[in-house]
Amino acid sequence: MKDQDLYWLAGWLEGEGSFVAASTGRGGRYNPPSLDAVTTDEDTAFRVANILGAHASGPIRRKKAPYVKGEPKPIWHIRLRSWRAVAVMRKIYPLMSARRQAQIVRAIYSVGDYQGRSEFKRKLNRTHERIIVEMRSSGAGWAEISRALSGWVTAPAVIKCWRRLSAPSPEAHRTRGPDAA
Image (tube, rainbow, N blue to C red; front, side):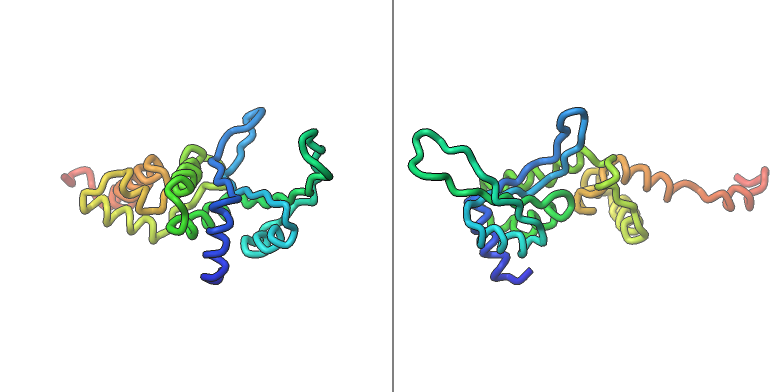
């Protein structure tokens, strides 16, 4: 995404966007965090969708309100969900107002509540393991380590990894004899 597009998108989302936290819907259905926007301008909808790599749904016809003269303009809906939405939220965060930043933080950290969902489950690779070992050895707490891993890994997952890495290997037990201290 070019800087010019990023700044334009941030300004447009400041007025037209919604940053929605992950939740559980009807019947326990999981709803991932999303970035939603609605506009009556078709060209703007397609520009936003193009920048985000999303789809613009529409035109959606609305019922005429009794107090409105003429036909209401059709609306276009743009929605980006899941990790793609979170990635965009992180990019535009510094460009947003305090109110929108609070919405973004709520949406991003809502993912931690649904860490067990396969969509957000991240496997710890060797780099993560090295970070965990280095930070824990220097006295960092579990939550601090989780935050250092961008919040994608919960503190319980970090603890589980630490225990696995700090447990003696099976070979160490075999090389020790019964007389070993």
